[in-house]
Length: 127
Image (tube, rainbow, N blue to C red; front, side, top):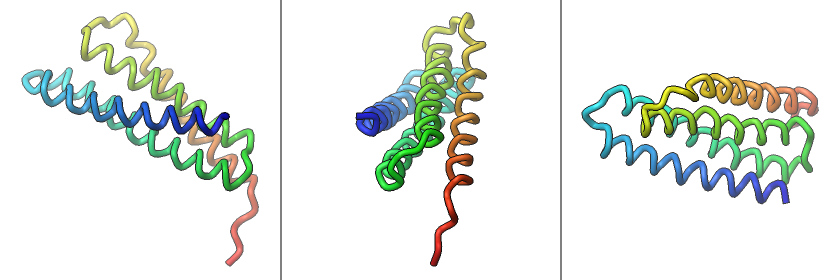
């Protein structure tokens, strides 16, 4: 069930990233700041959509792992907080949730750290 959620989150992240990139190009071509907010959110969402796909594949192969699961959930949280807050700021220009963006960035960093811990706990591959 968990892998299904990660795959769904990856698909939705990818979908929203493409939509945000298109919105940036069409809605904000004349506004460099709002264009940058949307494209940055879209880039991070797409990067982490791909990372979620990789985590789902790795989790199935590696039979799970607490730090692998933590990485996936932190990537999902990071996308909602980081990319979502940038999208909202670009679309609404309401600055009330700007403080959420760094929380999303921290979630991304903690996700990558969790993946590193997962890798550290595994024996190196033998060739």
